Image 1 (tube, protein in one colour):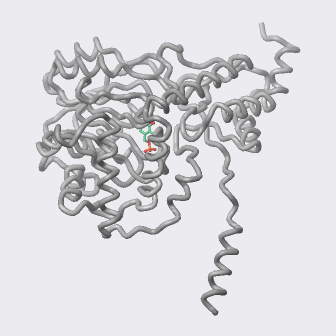
Image 2 (cartoon, helix red, strand yellow):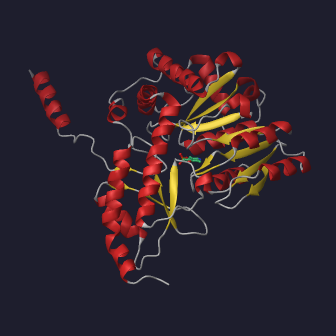
Image 3 (cartoon, helix red, strand yellow):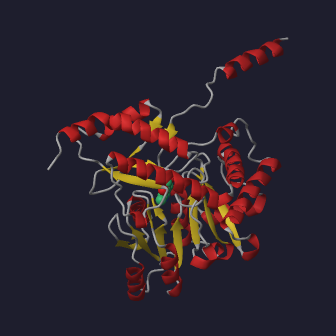
Length: 393
Ligand SMILES: *Cc1c(COP(=O)(O)O)cnc(C)c1O
C-alpha cells in the first residue's frame, strides 16, 4: 500500500515536469536537441556493467562507419569526457613528441584557442594567420613547411565557428602529406554535416564532439585516428586525464572509460545517432542545414542585414551578421526581445568588426528559421523605421 502511494506520488511529480518547450538555440552549440534525445537520458547506467560497455563500443564503431573508415584498416575512435576543447587539447598533449613543433593555421577564435593550449603545454609552435574573413592559404603553408623542418604537426580548424568560414581541407591535406607531417583537424562544428574523407585528405587526428552537428547533448569529445600512429606516441603524454593513448588502452582492456563516463550523455548520443541515420546520414543533414542557412540569409538580407563573409567561403553551420547601423540598434536589446519570443541567438566573436551570429545547426528546421526571421522582423521594426525616416548619407 505504501509502495502504491509512493508510486502515485512519484507519478504526479513527474506529470508536473513541463513538456520540453525550451527556447530554440540558434547558436554554435550546445544546440537544440530532439525530445527523444532528451528522453534517452531518463535512465541510470552503471559504468562497469557489460551492457553499458557494449553500447559504448557500438558508439565507437558507429562513429567510424559514419566517417567511412574501418577498424580493419586500423582506425579507432577514442571517446573522452569533457567538451570539445578537451579532445583537441588531448591530441596535442598526447601526440606531439617532446621535440615536436606545431604549425597552427588560424583565422578565428578556435585557431587561437589551439595556440593558447600549446602555450600552456609549452609545446613549440608557430602560427600562420589569415584574416578572419579569409580561408587558410595552402601556398603559404607549403612555403612554411619547406622552410621549417622542425614542424612535425599542422593544426587546422575545419569550420571556424567564429565566422562560419570553411577552410580548404583537401588542399591543406595534400600539402601536409607532401611534406610528410601530421595533420590535426578540429572538425568540431563540421563533423556530422560536411564529409571528411580521412584517407584521401590525410587527416591523422579528427576531433569532434557529441553536441554539435551530431545533435547529442554535451558530455564528451571524440578523436578518430590510426591506432598505429597513436601507439607510436607512447610516453609523450603530458597529462593523465587527457592522455588519449591511455584512454584507448582503457577501452582495449575492458571497454571502459578510465574515469567516470558521461553516462547520460552517451545514452542520448545513441538516440542522436539513430536520428541521424533516420534522417539519411551526413548528406541529408547537410542538406537540411544548407536549407536553414539559405532561408536565414535571404530573410536577413531582406531586412537589411549583411553577412560578414563572402558567400563563397561561408559554411551553412553558423552565419555572422554585421551590426546594421540603425540609429539606436543595440544587440543586447535585440537579444532580449528574441529571447522573450523563445529564440536564442549568439554574440559575435570577431576582433575587429561588430557582428552577431545565428546558427543553423541542431534540431532546427526551415519552419524554425522562418519563425526566427519573423521574430527578428518584429524586434527590429522600430530601428528599421527610424532608418527609413532618416536615411544616413
Ligand atoms: C565548439 C567548438 C570547439 C569546442 O568548444 P567547447 O566549448 O570546448 O565544446 C572547438 N572548435 C570549434 C571549431 C568549435 O566550434
